[in-house]
Image 1 (tube, one colour):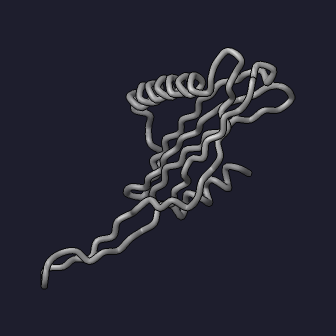
Image 2 (image 1 turned 45 degrees about the horizontal axis):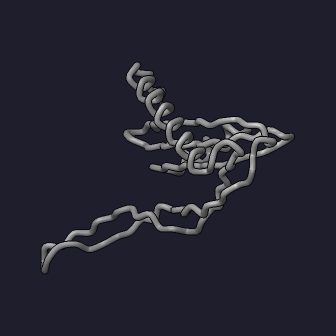
Length: 144
């Protein structure tokens, strides 16, 4: 089950934020979407935020695809000794290290350029984020 796989994954994670952008075309129809999620543990509880948005289109309207390599990062713990002379402390921080790139395809339509499609996706992201904040303000109960 997918729920079991997600549960097993988050059991060992203290904090994580991921974003996935993709364009899928199947049987003449396409979907351009973005999934963003964040999970953080605090006092034995996990807080999870999840946002999905996108747009559907007919593959017939696509003129070509523009590709862009976006960086893929991994959180890496770093331990440092900070201070001066005898007043030194050990501090552990998290840095984001680039571990590769992922190619993202953006459709360029006969009536819209790839830049215009990206601007529409930015608008959809803004509207989705507004909806997330609106929902968060309703004080949804936290389940331990």
